[in-house]
Image: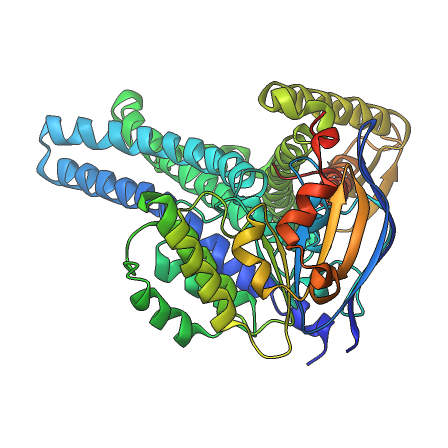
Length: 235
Length: 280
């Protein structure tokens, strides 16, 4: 497998507060990778850098052979943890908007998925429930035939039934050979589908390994996470 | 298709979607203006004082509102679509910051210019209409009389055309400069040191940007002034320094100052958007 994401000596600070400190790793394509870490560990900052939302950092970031920018953004399907749709957009407007900007977006599939997910085509996003908005954003992301999917807490804030539904939608709609980098706190729910994990804490890379190797000892990823981020990390 | 050509082709899509976003509210005010003008027309034809008075009043009020609403949307859309949660969508699009900014300047600057044009036409027309009774004769006749009286001292037609082009171009440039100043102030107010009280800082930064511009323009006019001098035989020339020529002229330095400042602010704003802003 070829290298799809490469990060070398990445450091990012907000004023005097360092959120990522000399982080280096590389990811092979075609995998589902879990980006794990406690709150404030730097996961979202790392994701924002990979998706080109933050550009003032030191170090080198390469996404499918490109620095983060318009070309890499055309290859990456990004699901932020926030709801980002404009207040004037209906579900149809949102689908048309994404179809305008991403050549790999399957508009027909998106329209079908709106029906499948029972989302009203003409309802404005601002009047939808949080769950409906999250479903709509998931459709917008998973109907792209992207090389890389970067999902920030895709199952955060939803009930367990909805989590299964979201995970199922991600796995079913993922193009063959694509890479998924997914940050989450809900390790138990997703560890069965992960090929490898990256753990970061206090802005530093603590662990990168395949799940097969990590679970050889009989421990689950969730247990390993708890061991790594023991009570010392809560202070 | 290469990656860069794909990206370049997205400017049209940005313009389309920015226009669609703005077209949900702003055109409603143009429709309201059209209804007011119709009311005005009906009042004039029927000579009934109530619809006529309402028509004149609404036409002027809505013309004012058009400018206000265009200005409001310059501020509101830029802030909302780029620096609120919607920024996650805007900044993850496969376009550059310059394209995001350029599209908004064209669409919302365009609405501002159109609103000013409508406002100018409405005020001139209603002013002319209302003052007819006060002056006691047709204003156009009065204007023709004045033109006839002063015709011998008026500059030649070619000069008047130059003046007209100059003032229209100046007007467009000043509107775009004002939009550039607003965009720069909003973008800068979302930088980390100002983020907590960004509304207050946006106003302060705007005042500073405008003051710097005023000082810069005054200095340039004092030390590097140059004008387009227009001779009575219809020829033109460049007059350097201001004192060297006392005939008809149009000042070129302010125009270049407006353009240079607007371009500087454009690049400054796109740099801030790209490098210095972190969407919350």
